[in-house]
Length: 169
Image 1 (cartoon, rainbow, N blue to C red):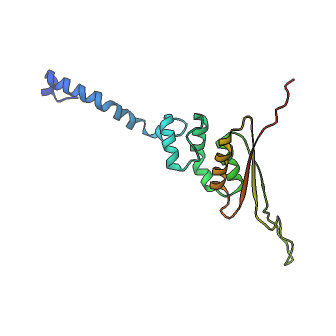
Image 2: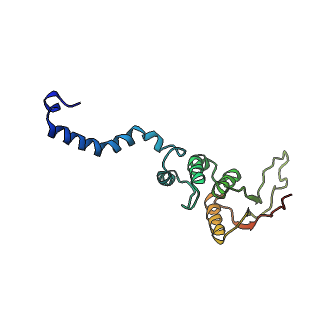
Image 3: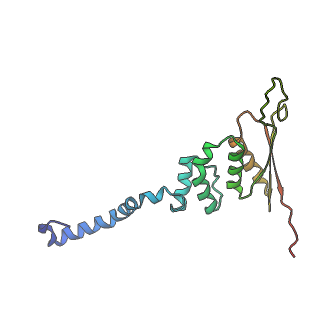
């Protein structure tokens, strides 16, 4: 694509070839830029960095499929943060297991004034997680996740236990 005057010059052709080698990776990245922002297609190291952009609840030790799922779900989880659904999904994405969540709240409607209040008078949240092989670090990870995703006013407790193994037949 050089002008005709430079097309026959050996020095100009070698100089431009060197520039092609330097600029080709940049042009390839620009041609595929949209795939860098898709958690399913981006390189694994960029997926971790992308997770910091969108506020994904990751700690850097997740397997690659779990990392990609957490990054893809981050925006949706921010919309339901502080709800039972948001807390459950955040823990499931981090550990691959759905937690058992008990809470003290409730909602009801009564046509008469001064009716009974639903739930318990003191707020409480308990998150239990049953893992095949729990490690001590799992309790700290679960505690950090629940602290970030729970309703702000709600005191909480967490528990990580081993799941019961059923004998195979």
